[in-house]
Image 1 (tube, helix red, strand yellow):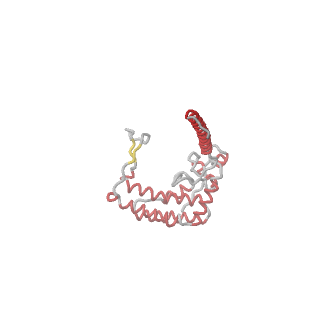
Image 2 (cartoon, helix red, strand yellow; image 1 turned 90 degrees about the vertical axis):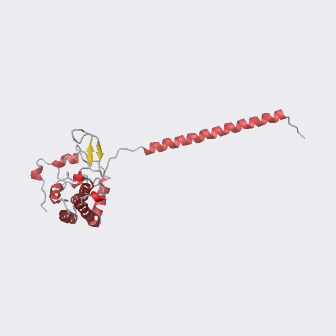
Image 3 (tube, helix red, strand yellow; image 1 turned 30 degrees about the vertical axis):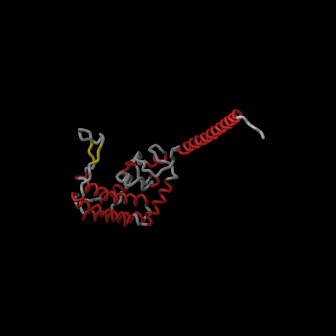
Length: 245
């Protein structure tokens, strides 16, 4: 029988332990390197690249000098009601019919705006239809604002002179029992037309989807781009025609 002294056995066990420890460190280092590489790779992939196309509303275009009926390719839907008081000649055609003072006024206004909306849709005029939608939507949001805040005043500005250049704070909404009934009902009337007669119009929804899909593959519009410069009118009042509805 082969006999191994305790000293020799202890030395061999110590050597094995050292080898095991070294191998564990090597594996750990490799795993850590792979993890670090993955993090770097993921970070690199997640970096945003500048967008060359967008359906965002381009606020910096010279709208007072443009006719978007003649140049509908310059229109972008944006979010909500963006551009509702900027895009001509549609603003001039729709604004005279936009009112929300009380329920009878809101009913007449929303009915007229919806009628114009349908006319634009029947003419395949998406820009006009979307602008009419924005006015109807603004009837709801503005009436709701006046219902939620006395006089429609939603913010307080920190500037002592009362200008709107300082930091603003939102005024708390009125309790339901304190809200003006006329404005609450006016908002409901516009919202009903928006939800039940505008967003359910299949042709409008199709045109909107097609437009936004196209916009996302088209260049971002700027005031200096060639398309915009070519569309600028020398005499907008004479060259741009606003229809009377």
